[in-house]
Image (cartoon, rainbow, N blue to C red; front, side, top):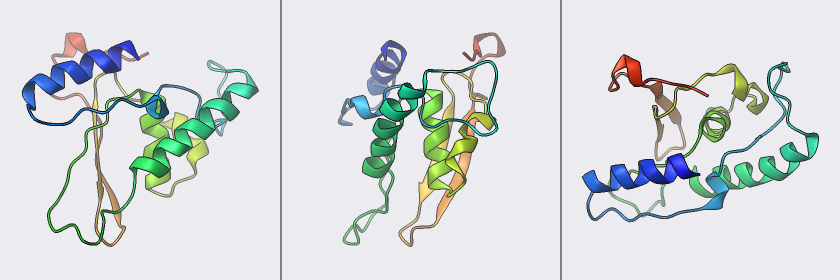
Length: 140
């Protein structure tokens, strides 16, 4: 997670006082076998079981309604990789998670997911790179 760690450090310089937490749950991996299957990416089947359980645990731990006692909006920034982001977006929007690989995200892009107190989820932005110079935009 070298890139994610470096990005976290850069963001932290601009958000002093914001607590940083590191977790292996958000480490890149193969969340679930994609449907339809793709020919350019075929991890071993065991990787889906190992990574998938971990990434699902990240979703369950971090993507949820605020506590009913919370009175003000709260914001969390997750710095992680595209496979994890795409899977979490599918799960949060209640789309079939097997469709995660149908989305393409550039490196360093911003995804903005809103979870309202009533549980309604809205995807405000997916993979935005409009803040980057075009020659710096990449994807892996």
